[in-house]
Length: 572
Image 1 (tube, rainbow, N blue to C red):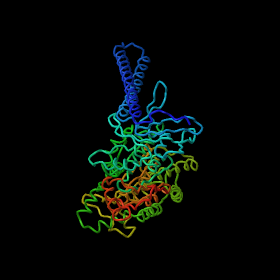
Image 2 (image 1 turned 180 degrees about the vertical axis):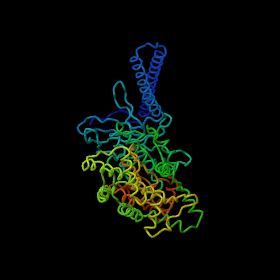
Image 3 (image 1 turned 45 degrees about the vertical axis):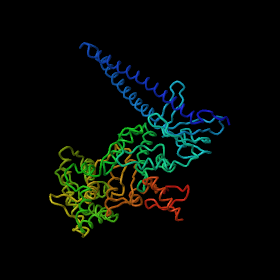
Image 4 (image 1 turned 90 degrees about the horizontal axis):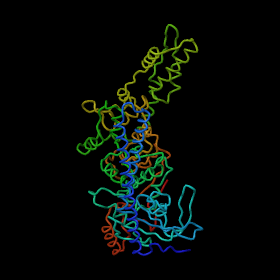
């Protein structure tokens, strides 16, 4: 093995940092020259267009406009690259591994940072993006045997050196060897910063099991159950950043949606994703989704109004209604009622016209055939079947207004299609009319909103959010089985669901990883049990007291004492 003499000592590392900063500064200068050049080209082209006479060739003008648009697009890409370089110059990298693949005589130093940086002259990677396949070894392995999954397959080799750095404002604060057991402490400091400071990225301190969550590409639904202070929110957002990097050709930030009940998460998103080199992503709430589906035509209580009512009033009947509508049994009864409606709500009668007639048995048979789709779509399909059969049997083609008349006749055959009436009748059918209570002004309680939406989806249909390619659900414990069934119906995409069942705002409607997996049977469940929210100083002080008293190690935030090197997570 030929030992690399590059940057072995701390002094050599500091010199290397200055070299990287110089390279970044030169790259920024080159980009600024390119930006000025593109800007001048755009100005010249615009001047050409404005000075052109009316008789100038139209095709030529279109070509010039297209050229301007293309240059503007290139300019935006260049400016985006400049922003990334400016972030790097402040803190170019946070980690390093020296790696040699099996059969190679030389080991290669691999510096890892927020973004990728390549020496354009030699085309050498000076800094690797933390999401790159080779960077995964920094999180997954200590010294010795290591491997990573590359596009060409698994690459196996050996790590000879591993270091961690803290670089701020271009200055190296510290450098640590992997033999020093500090990663957990560094992570705890990152996660226990004062609450008035916006959360930052934690790419320098991601643990091996956290890295497995972040780089999970296969799970169609990933449920992350994390204790308070475990970093689950950070991990979920870093997972999104990884997916945007990994699948940049097929998914972008505009294809991702986050459902969250609070603005704290929105602030975190707006801060962390740009730090990780990605644009902020769309965020909404369950209330906003409900308003969109109802087209703002149904008034309802918000989740926080429900919680406020629980806190301010001793209303046992209100509690009973919430608890009842938050159960899996309630969802089963609602499904049963929908099946009942589709069997019993139709009173098929024959349709007679001067040139043809459609028997009642045919209409009933057709509706049964389309029993699994919403009533509105059922009616459309039955109209189409009637048109086709009349053409075959009577050699008569039904068009325009006649089709509309048939649709009206079919709609009349249903005893009612009014959503509000059907929802009220559901409780009569259950024999529990007291479980539905509207406030003054026909305002539905929050617990009724999503059963009502679910009934609407099953009977009338609703537009799906097909543009969303990945859905993130925060505070998973605050949503009920009916809400998750609504989400499953509206979003066909992959999902990351995170929360803590011990932190439910409403104790009468709390969901767990297990109850969520009843709605999503193929979901993978990850458990993050280790909390980093206590400060290191408090934890060490408490542990010292226990050692002095010959007691077992303390439990942190209800966590059972962990064995040395035990996994902080497990996966089902």
